[in-house]
Image (tube, rainbow, N blue to C red; front, side, top):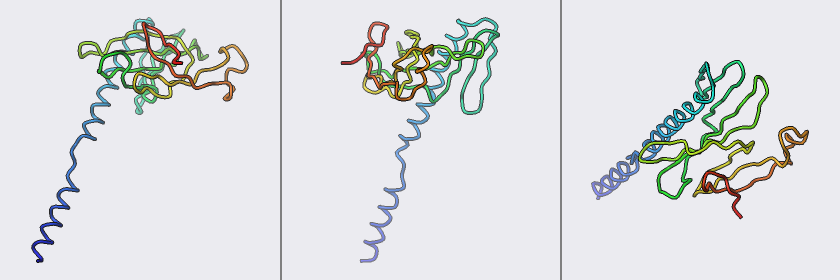
Length: 174
């Protein structure tokens, strides 16, 4: 009877200790996508600035700046998921923009996967803060007041809105 119990214990230990590897693959795949999407965003920024200086810090934040303007790409503000009608994972990248020292309207880069490559589909100026991207729905915090209004930074003056990306624009989902 003892060999029977020992066999069961060995089977349980082996079965529970094996890792399918999908979690690691998902993390590696996610990092690869972030890297590719960041490269597309950097290419866009370089087309917007002349004589830009690039700085990167350990957490993955990348800054491009010249004497007049600065763009910041933060990994925490990159969202991946389905945006367009195909089944390929796309991305949204929020670029924080600064005119000299003052923050200006942010840009939302819509980056779609086309023919196994990420391609910039559009840049939309908006102060929205993306919360999530899931099932072609973009959930964002949107200010009720313009940037030049004193109530712009009022936390209760922002609303959560759901959008879809259609024909180059964010369309409010009803």
